[in-house]
Amino acid sequence: MMNNFINCENNEKMLIINADDFGMSYCTNTAVIELLEKGAVTSTTVMVPCPWFPEAASYCKTNPQANVGIHLTFNSEWKTYKWGPVTRDSDVRSLVTREGYFPNRIEEVELNAKPEDIRKEIRNQIELAISMGVKPTHLDNHMGSLYGLVYGNDFLEIVFDFCEEYDLPFRIPRFIPKELETIMDERIVKKLKERILSAEKRGITILDYLIGNATGGIEADYNEAKEQLIKTIRSLKPGVTEIYVHPALGNEELKAITRGWKKRQIEYELLNDKDVINTIKEENIKLISWKELHQLKKHFNS
Image 1 (cartoon, one colour):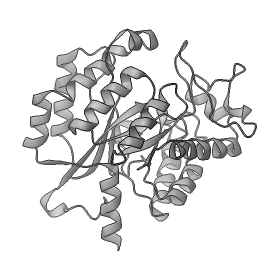
Image 2: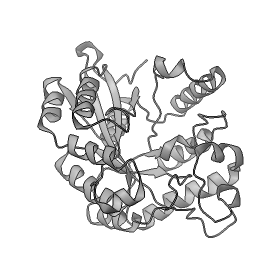
Image 3: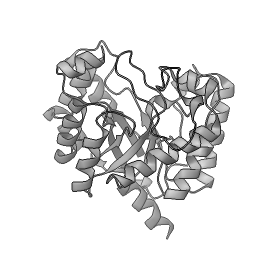
Image 4: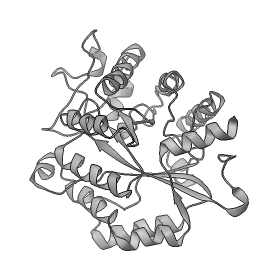
């Protein structure tokens, strides 16, 4: 059953557009702040371990109304632009490489991370964010490193503990797309469904649907990405959907960080595209934030 506070009789469609990776770089921060203030994205999530987190936190402190969650981060995927744990008060060596950074790949998190170290680092990322001015509206996870998507070694129940403690929603969809189920190991799908049920039983606010590649592949040009995004928007189902994006300014800084810079620039431009904005209006889609979703659920349950 979808979020039952949605008006199903009228086929109401609600959409969260979340900008991931706030705090990752200056060019990301600039793009995300602009899009937040325009209402082109309805929320964002900040990477606390990253170099430009202090600037993101400063924005949050002076703009407490901003819908900013925490992008729990446990991997550092690029070769020459790295980050590591914020934990300083204890040993979390199971989370890092010999050089002291988070590992490149999410499967390394599944294979090596100890649950107690995951728990310490999650708490410290949340507490550091709060101490620097972030009022978190929700939690999600950078690149799905805590979901157990590779080997089935997930850390989601630990995440749910923090969702309950801090009263925060979490990015996990009630419905797993059929096309995703067909390519995933049956054991992993079964465990993920168990975690979804667990989140619901704990009373954690979650989504109905999650879309992570609404603009096509890394090689898509602007027109291809635009066509894909508009198609995705038009095909949204009744209920609550989140589309997550990674907007950034495609400058020399971003080009030095990732070969995927063009896709991030395109996503930034698409969120400013009048045709995309008009499609959302034409389809009678209600844009909401994670904060608003959480408040709706609380009101319904009161």
